[in-house]
Length: 559
Image (cartoon, rainbow, N blue to C red):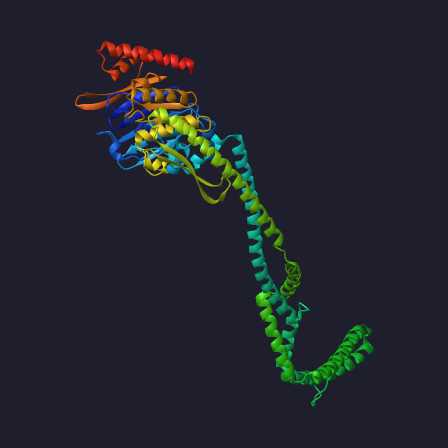
């Protein structure tokens, strides 16, 4: 419910503050007094299109503040947006300048999309083409489903469950198919790697190091043989008798002589004797080594090829040969798992089954919607008849779409206001007054299924007779029992039914035009109704106004 509207420097309004009540709130006043400006301000506070030209002349910016009581749908929305509730309720603020426009909800900056989302839960304005709900197929479908009753709503929940189960099966199948493709690709890669590593015959992580050493030995076989001979001569035997073994022999003989005079030298003699034995042994091994060292070009080439192969393996799977061997073992294990594979046949069968279940659930829901649509047409036409729209044709059309959690129907309310005119979507054909009356009739039909708590009507009494105005007044009052209704009217029959009556007027002071709005007392209402009926000074008008108020009181008591 809208509890308070503050407007500052907006169009002709310098400063205005209006409090509204529950039920039916009417705004009356002369043509051009500023009633539409108040509705425009409310629309602007809820994200409607505005221009810097709406800032009052001489002011830098305009400000509008609309305060609403919180409903559960609005509370849920605020929680989703992480906007805190305020003690006074929901405060919608709009600041407008010639360059910028900023909107806030409870002090938090919000964008246009957020305001549009909130507005659908809060207010429906039918003024100057501002109707939103009649243009929203999702809202029209929701209204129809609520009108259809528990059986239809249960069917819709069944569809939502079937849709969720089908999408789960479909997503699982798509995922498996993608995984199958990835599995086959990975399988090709692993098979190539496994084949390459198997053909490399990797066994020892030290093989590369050993081959590098062998290549060095084979590459220098001539030098090794020659140097082995030289070392052998130096250690064991040469032509001038100066080998290490000869010299050690001479030293050993000298020390033996010395031991005759000093037995303490015996240990030193043993050391020299041991050295002679070691040199002799080393000489024999050098001689034997020299016999084994031969140039082998074939072996050298074979070793070089193997080294190149192992280095390539290390670059791809290493960096070390030990890493490559570990990778080969891991590849073998992964290949075993990939080659087993998973069949998609079972998932495909489940997806098809759940798709069929969804289709059947959607068919049942469509059937129930068709029946609800037929019933809705009859009730709506009955509601429109006393509103001077007896010639109107109305239909609920179901246009097939791809299945969703809401079914496979796009719901379209179509209307032909005048005989001979083709049926067209409601929002595209109805004029301002017709739109208001159609929405009024729809609200009367959908009274218990529409969560929007505030309804705003403009031009609803355009071109109607007193009898029709009385019918409109009764419907507005009835809807006001479950919704807050704001209605701009020139009809005293409608204004008399108000729970809250606001008079809007315009005056000039110091060559500036101002708009003011005043909530009327009971006596002031009588004067306002008399003026609407025919003039303040006419006794008949005052009597008529009193009769309207008395009649309105009777209607409220009987409602």
